[in-house]
Length: 331
Image (cartoon, rainbow, N blue to C red; front, side, top):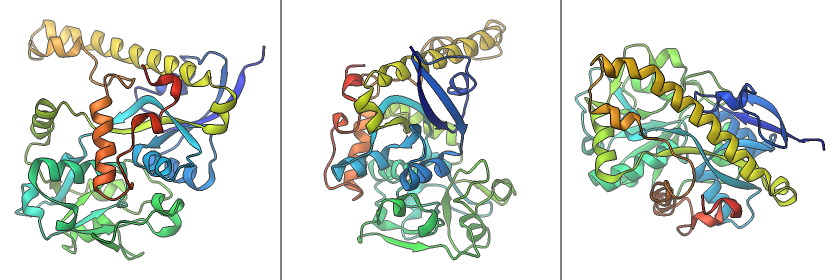
């Protein structure tokens, strides 16, 4: 029996590399793989629906489901996590060192509804009492290359959102003092963004938090949250005709991740045995900091659903079964 041929696009990383390069096969499926920067990929999916399987942002999926006609079905495969609130940068000579000091300030983002900005705003409100309305937001991406604009999203009227002029970028505005901070992570050149990686490495910016790792650990220990950025989504028409693809993809991605985790443990073992890493880290390495499935990620995903509602992206807090494939809900 011939395998089902599907196109798939990811921003390939350590977790997904075995799938992308064919070291792990998906049972019953022949994948035509593309490696695309995640922001550009999500925009292309929402604007042109180019790929059958792709990395997708959680806010986009919640917004589409809220409208009642999402063309995508989410799978509980999570290829990327980041403590986005610790990625805030300020000028190297800035006196700012705490989120509460951002009240009344100007902050730049690629766009208001991007996943990282949703996490950042939610955590800032929950942890530091800083509301989205307390800042002025500057979006870099123009309407023609804006993820939200690709499906008609506009920021809520309660927040002040301004567009970065086309001859400027978030990073250049930060470096010359036109804005006070930026939440941006663009490791490669994309069709959407003008804040090039070399500008971020210029030495003119620094993290808002003096110790971003310590802040990430503090939040994780307090809340248990390791913020999920993206999941894998399948074209709804494909899922409706071939429902088995959801679990076949899930098991293949899980195998790929487990291979990477085991390899990482093997590489770190000599460092632990020789005392070059803290002994208390051994138990942590034995675990899995990035589990797949809904059972181990329900709190994190429901927090994102709450943030989408609180920040005006959705009209209500959606349930997880409104975006995830029905045959993955018990994973």
